[in-house]
Length: 171
Picture 1 (tube, rainbow, N blue to C red):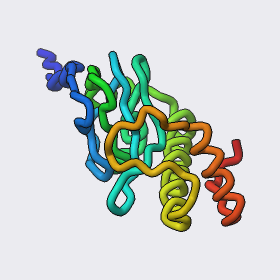
Picture 2: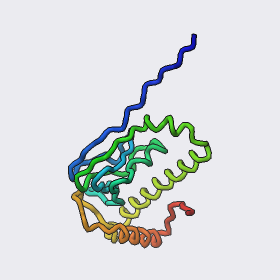
Picture 3: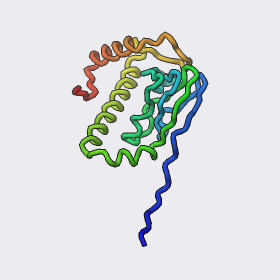
Picture 4: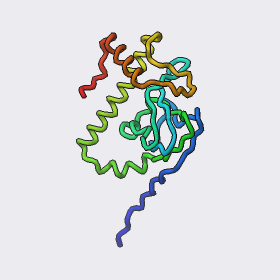
């Protein structure tokens, strides 16, 4: 008589709702899920003494928290709702079976990309600490509708040119 090993089913995706200013997750937290933004806007922020610096905004139909799925490292940034937000939480357990079938070379490419992104966010944080009077936008934690991502990236590039720093990215 043949008996199949019964594996527990991964938890199904669930919906979370956030109010403006509410955290979806904090920088440094150990991850268990990624999120698909169904509606609203999320601010991705790096901690800085006494405040945060916004490094990105995530909108409806975009994913947040995916980096941690690929490298299982603590969250590299915090995520805060800027507006009323609804997300679909996708537990890593639900994705692990799918990812197991991925060819090893593709896993290596994805891991390298995840590592590069983490290095880039650490470079942003380091540059901000090195030049506290820089052009980089610093956020007190309150939503800022006037944030200009292009200006922030230009300031980061400018600061990087001054320090001779390189994130290791080759394109």
